[in-house]
Length: 408
Image (cartoon, rainbow, N blue to C red; front, side, top):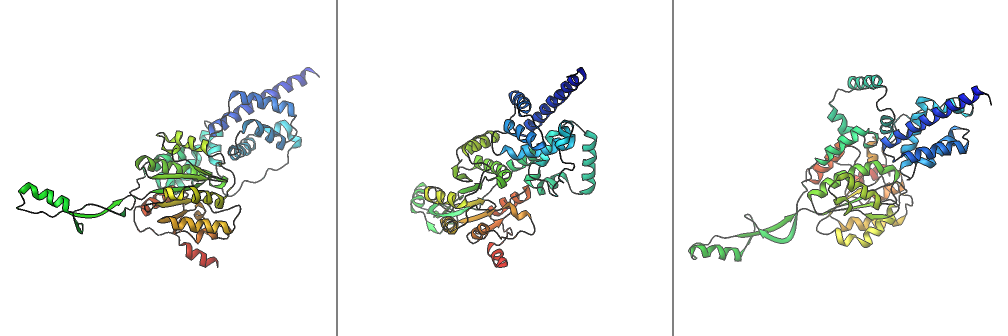
């Protein structure tokens, strides 16, 4: 090997190390815990594996940096955006790459903007300012209104932080329900003999001021069943912030997560710090961003938890896209049992953000026949609408029965 070839090899190796280091920093900024040791392991893995193509390079870094299944989506977005923009692989293995890269999808995938922001933070400021000016010229509404209507899955890191702050300020004055117990009331219909006689003793019995009893009212319990499969992960995370804020103010909130199994995270979400609460929820739910088995999870809930948490007019918030892996007669039975056990069953489905949504999937059609209301839950505006509906206001929702008739 000549001195020129040795020098060129050292320069290429230096560029490769610099690029992998920059890529690792971007992954860490996007939410994947990548430390210095992982960068060293990645450099050694690329050297030992003798990478010969883009796919080899992708899976070599994937095997080192990705430790959990839910991190694969962020890694894939980061890899495609990072190396497509900067062309680092083209310089290293140009002969092994295809001539053209696949075109980007029309609608950004979940996490794409967050990854792009992490990759190019602090660079191309002029280009970012031009994009902001273009957005401001196209949109004539305030930033607040844009944030309210933006899909959770397409938010940047800064927008997610703003959304979390807005969610924490949402108040939930639930519609009160009457109980069979009685309580002192000025407008009651029953005379409270004990309080009446006690009050008359103050005047020696000369005056009798009647005291009355009326129905006692209380806030109904909230039971949330949240889907944590891959397609629902981002929506569930932000809705957990909403449940955390609600749980701080009310003690009668029970939260369950389900993917391939059912997990009770009520105690975990009661921690004071919202980030610690969500981290605890993620630690308890080992099937996060996995598959979906709605029927199996509902069977577990109906068998072990329904009698404990669905009393006294409970309201159930069922959050899922309804894409069941094994949609059979068992799902219809468990949904019917859940519906009969609660006061109101509200299905929150992020797929309703699409105007042309139709319940074609078997699991979706099965669930539709056993819910009282069907509402979207994909942005801050839909979440605020849910709050008003739970507070007793007449807010229009999608009619599940009408949707079934349209499909039929």
